[in-house]
Image 1 (cartoon, rainbow, N blue to C red):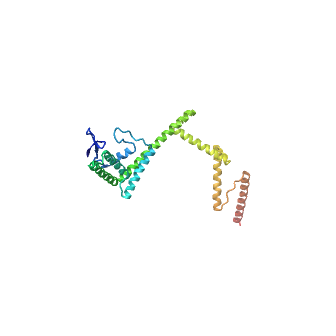
Image 2 (cartoon, rainbow, N blue to C red; image 1 turned 90 degrees about the horizontal axis):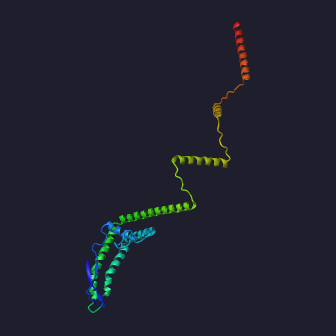
Length: 280
């Protein structure tokens, strides 16, 4: 609805018969989610109110605070069953703009101001109806609105991290340039593997040095064979010990000859006794 209000000067209608226009749009309320999203984008400086306006410049932290304030406002209005504060503020701005025109009208005997107030009330009524409709929309779509707030804050935080990363990169590039430090070489997988092996080797060398551990001797194949035989011998001795047998003693060549001689003598003695028994 558009209404024309005659211009007054010195408490009398202006001789030029000019008019002021005031308007209230019956469809100016949140009818869909995009309507509300556009309002949030405007609050964050992402979309100007009109084409001629510039964007509001907000820092990332200011944007997060703006979102948090809107979210808290909606939650309180739902809890207390009241109209959202940000919607009331918008309504008051529109109402004041409409009624401001009444100040030019005099309080004369014909009560000019009262007459034109009836006209401004028509526009204010429309704005009030829009206020109630927008508030109902917010409450009915609170879950989707809260998700929008969460997504927007996540986007801002990611952007902050990227800006910080880029800022740090430029800072270190500047430092390296001032100190004439060459950028770190990008290694191949093979080079990385070699570096890991070298690092592990140095670690164990340092560990042995601290604990006074001598490095392991590198054995020849002959020494390895001797160690295997010794290990097998110890294993067999351990097994004989478990079953209660004494391990076989290895004799010298002289001991073997003496043992064989003794065995032969016992054999001959036994054969002689056997022959004598047969003769008898």
